[in-house]
Amino acid sequence: MHPMHPTSMSVLHRNTPPDHASARRKLPGWLWFIALWCGGVAAAVSLGFVFKLFMNATLFAVTR
Image (cartoon, rainbow, N blue to C red; front, side):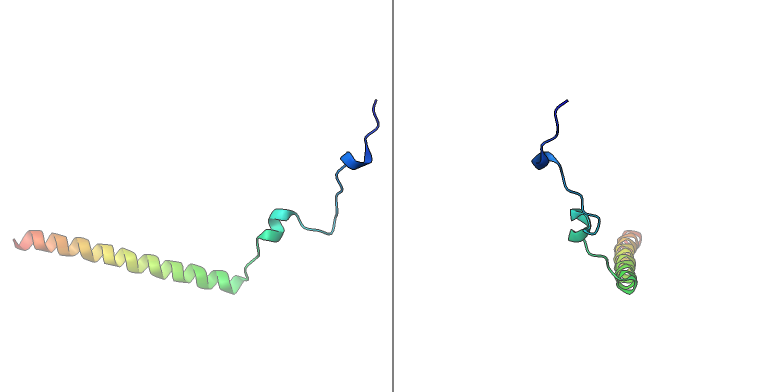
């Protein structure tokens, strides 16, 4: 068997986080709440707008 060369071994550190975890920051819970609330309001308003467009198209077709 060949002994491993010291430069070919990877060094593991227990205290340093992985690269992908350090690049992504964790958001606090209240910020998630505000972001999801704003997304829900935006979705409801856009759904209401689409509903209004379809109602206007339907009423226009009925009145003609």
